[in-house]
Length: 193
Image (cartoon, rainbow, N blue to C red; front, side):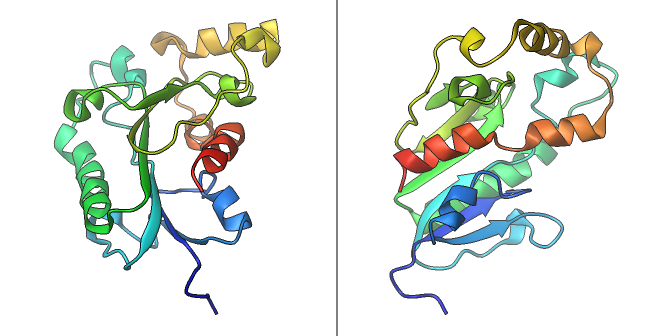
């Protein structure tokens, strides 16, 4: 049974729940709204939501597709979950809300992000420049030099993987990179409780 003072955190398009894990571990009432069980597009939020984390699919906005002009982008399809997230933000009016997406074309519709980060800045040894829009306290980066977190070999590998022509079609690799980095998730939690 939940107590009335338990704070509700919605994790929209939350996938593995990595971004909301620290909230769950701290006793918040975390509700992961993600396919296939829940579709953010038709989700009706509960009352008294304290915070919202959102990570809608980046497929249509990703720079990773820049090296593949033969794949047509469907921005209307891509904006459907983004629009649903914004509907929920406005319905709930939580203390904080954040929507993340890798650096790409989404800023054409949402404008300049409130915050940018790379996972290595929070101790996770890889690069994936990510933008966050919203109303939240900015997490504090733990590192300002990549070499403090990543080996030279890791840095070279990340540079190679960030070139569209070198990317494989590895679904497993894409799914792994889609998970919110643990170091960033922890720092975000520490800044927004």
